[in-house]
Length: 178
Image (cartoon, rainbow, N blue to C red):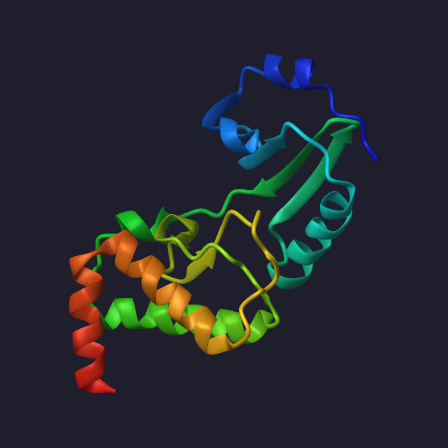
């Protein structure tokens, strides 16, 4: 494996810390020059480190850039997906919600029995051409959910939590129009 020097990494002036989760021992940096997101883990899990990038490459090709590790840390680098997080998207119409929701259901069908695992609205990017794309692949794995229907229900509950009333109104509209 590549050796990752945390000290050198921290000295790069074009890196910006954008997220830190002490309880998970993770930090996410943004590299503005290369347009990469770098996720640093303050622990090393060999099985995950060996397998996870392969899963990302298989199910979400073009997102994985590189990986590096030491005996007690690991780093995974991803390409930036240009666009706006769905949580901040301005075209909240029932039709658009339906397009994104149907896209996610197809994404589960495409990757099953593996799933992204974190369908929060902040992990969906609306690209400049209006197409949804997933980011933040940390939880991509073989699902523990027994059926696709349970995965669909998980998406529904995450959207309701993340968007609130507009999502509730969409579901009423969808039930009337399906």
